Image (cartoon, rainbow, N blue to C red):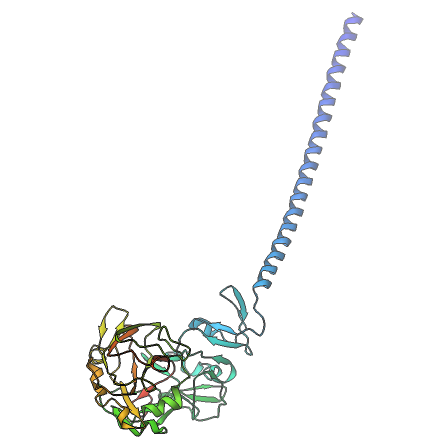
Length: 403
């Protein structure tokens, strides 16, 4: 009996020991698992922190590599960018980050339209013309007011020229009806801003430009001694204000800026299309070309239409103010019936003639090029033709007026 009890007791002890060892093993495994997971979490947190700092450092390095030099000229493509000038914001443009500081230099890359229909008195108007250095780069800054577009031509009594805009402002009164705008007790006037083009092609005794909006263009060149066309001071205006100051858009020009002219039909597609701007075309045969005429002058537009100057005026493709003048210091070297080119007709045949043609393209369709016919090859490289795009230039049949 004692032997059976002893065996039973030993069996119970063995079971207890096994249970205890199993419990101990489970406990140890649980502690190990918890410690292992804790270590794993700590490792992941460390790696995440390291990755975060790495990414932040990488991003900072990327931003630093994109940041433009402090002296870099900031290109302005949009109205929104123009409105940010002087605010100190960072703006990424074409892969470079620029700071729009008040003392930075800016250059327009497109025409800019500033909407001033609302909050006239709150507009920081003079800052764009006094506080900041903005190279207009042959583009224009216009102002949208009361469903009209205007160009700032006079500012506190001073005429604004093309190129960089930086003028000293003098105080004057505020007259909202005449488009005065106030800011910091200084005032500027959007005045003399509306040109007049007339309603039909005409002959003109006086014309006005935004270089002096209230006074007619003056004769200053002897080339205008003998002229035929519809205006007598065209060449004076050319030499005084235009001659070399505006970009050439005729293709295939030589080092002297003239495109050669061959006998027969000539077609030239401009390097830049034109809309809402003036151009001037110069046809020059005054060096070596004798017994020459010009005919079949046509304008080409982006809607695939081809029109004479008269047709383009009649259908609204160009403004009715068109200026044309064949002039020289000797009347023998002028085309006497130059008016024929307006309808695509032929000039008379003379030696060493030249002609200037000014016209403004409307918003109806972009001007893309021109074509014409002549009876012989002109004396290249001194003779030929060129076309200049007259950004920021305005002409008017009357003194410029406020709206």
